[in-house]
Image (cartoon, rainbow, N blue to C red; front, side, top):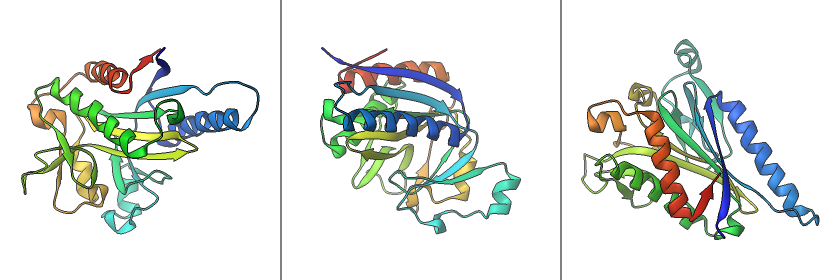
Length: 228
């Protein structure tokens, strides 16, 4: 039987509130693992859009933030230090953020493979729109023209945390995202490479609900799970 993953669309939600939900689900799974109750952990997949916010990973560098606190406040952009991997990134309206809280002990205990699988979900989703995307050697996330110097552009950022093989945080796919927000940071700490979106690549807006359904379908296929 396939593993079940409980899906929930949180709509638009403040970053801290969504983080608290993830943390509660993670702690619930950890408590089950520590107990001898015989209860089994549950998998979850959360979708959310955040109001404008910059988040810095645990190994990130503050100098990759090119805007001071006063300027951020004036622009209505929040800022958080997080416990995920990776550097600085942006979340905002019309960007689809996915947070899988999975027990990898029930799937496979390989973080590298997990990240490649998340990337594959996005690569397959972009192919639905005629966009050829792939990976950039040594850089997590999904890229377009990654092998063409000067044309590399990132369309999906990723950063995860894993505790006793329970995952949290995840991916952020730029759909109709206002890319101007990325001008105030060095995205993911990577110099001289651009950021893009489905809207930018296609020259038109894309329905968020369609993107969500496509990601759900590919997530179920790539991870060989059933979304409920």
